[in-house]
Image 1 (tube, rainbow, N blue to C red):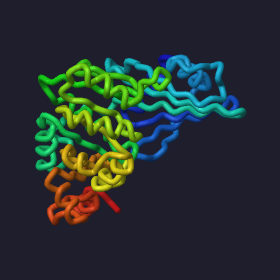
Image 2: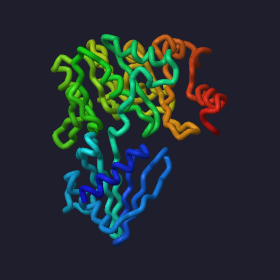
Image 3: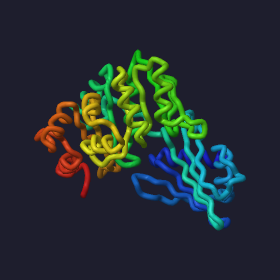
Length: 316
């Protein structure tokens, strides 16, 4: 089974697939890959119906709790590269559905070339040199928010970096990483509290999900640390509204928020993936707060898409 799984992962990496879907109905196995947001079916082989059970074993799932949805994580070396993999499984009476997500296959990104616009790359580089403050990333699932944060963190030198994540998507020797574990009471908020006792320079919070995590992110920034995190929001401006909804005082947030970034991953006509960023720096945040609209120089997602369409890089 190991050789078969490696061959499937090799194929997924070749085509830059983000997820591998395995559906077992009786003895029939269906294997699909999500490539550029579209599902592609791959040819199965004899014995593939044992793959789900093998992945259960690798991800250390409880085979005794068949009808309970479960998620586990493991690592595997493919062609000399260590992959971090997450396996989610749902069993029913007549079928099993598993999704294997490749967490770190696309991390080889030059942080100085994250954006197609040089001024945005310079903005990202500049904000990572700030001694303290809060940087928030938003965007749809799969838009590359976590990858962007890892790329920025990997380019930082001579700093003590700590992360609290659920799950840890990419393991790195450059920083100390904590895994959220609700069973022992380690959530995002308590994880940040523990990290603050270790004299960090930079803290990365995988996701702000609730009021406690939102407030702890602002507290950490206010006590002299650079904090990076993600939050669910459709635009860079609505990040502020979302934080307010989670109980964060607007004035405290505006004092600490260095940049609000919304991003999208799109596909060019040539099939390459491209990430576009909508960035509100402190000047733009202040302008928006005062006028409740963006300045004339603000480069929104919509403007960027229009430019890319005009230049012939993407279609409608």
